[in-house]
Image 1 (cartoon, one colour):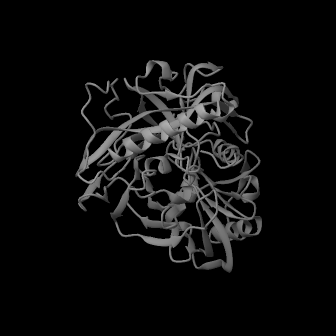
Image 2 (spheres, helix red, strand yellow):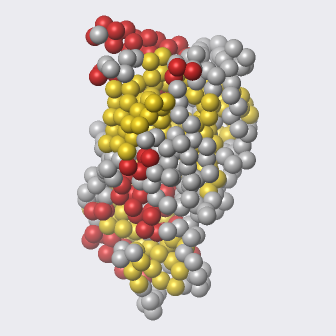
Image 3 (cartoon, one colour):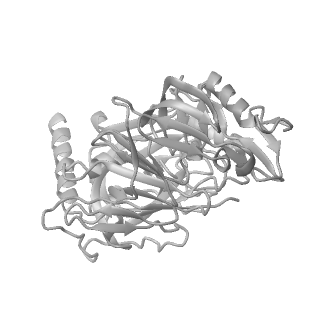
Length: 466
């Protein structure tokens, strides 16, 4: 059995390297946001989502839905898997490293979702390109346990991932790459709820994550970026060499399962509440809210409210501080600035004050002790990261940041030609559907002369609310 297992792994790695070398231009996913714009969010659902999510041992990815937290991510995308290709809706998370989909023979896997998406079970036996190991071989199995009590387990499989590949300025073509992922047989907890998806794809900093797999040939940079548009509900998530616009950069903390930077100071308007007391700060678009250690949180709240002494503050869900305000929040509340080693992030009032019904606003800052594994650190979720281009350069351990109009385009360099192609996200709800595609009749993926891998996934998300 050991020899069989070793042989199977060699076959998987061989397929992986061959396919990755053959992929040119880049690829595109279309993604939706689960919770919608700032207005009309159920604020406690956001908190529940974040607490459940960070209870996991470093696992997650982007989604869309009905405004109720499932604890499994914030964004989802539609992908194609297999030959012939079939569509699957999977959560996408920059904090996750394990990728999996629900499989035929699954115990209690959902067959329908209240989120308006069509669910299906992946069956490797019906895919001509699937390579599997023996489900009975313990060394081929995977299992992930989540902090909210949910879990997934099954066996490993290799198959083709289909996506839209960047082929020029604002141009794409269908392409594929071979990946290794989990075939989920037993799912529990929120993974079998009425708000479920077909699976989860992880883009974390592990050798097993999707980023690492697509770069495993050694000819592609481990580099990805996202730009979340809270105004229009759009945005872009790319894997590739982002060269436009110009970015501020700061080092990523080494030897961490999270994407962390060092915060050196925090300024609220004209008031500095932390200066010289460095704090590790987790950058995580898979979380919604922002979290600070208790003392810093109290100082921040005092500075935020200082100019509005007559606010009638009340607690919502016994946790969120909320108030009524019928004037411009950006005019009457301060900007919060986080200064890192060599970059900074400005969090504006329209970012950190969550608009609710009837001119009610709730403060989007919470105590970091509510999130497992955050401890005394700061965590900045998409509340702080929206309307900014954030680039994760894993090869050089650098985080890039820039305030940006996420409804516009960004420039990505083609590693073969050096050309810079403009890339824009597309709305998932308006994007063309993936049609079933057979490899024998599909256009061959673009092959560059040098065989280098240029992988650029564009994940555009339509933010809506119900």
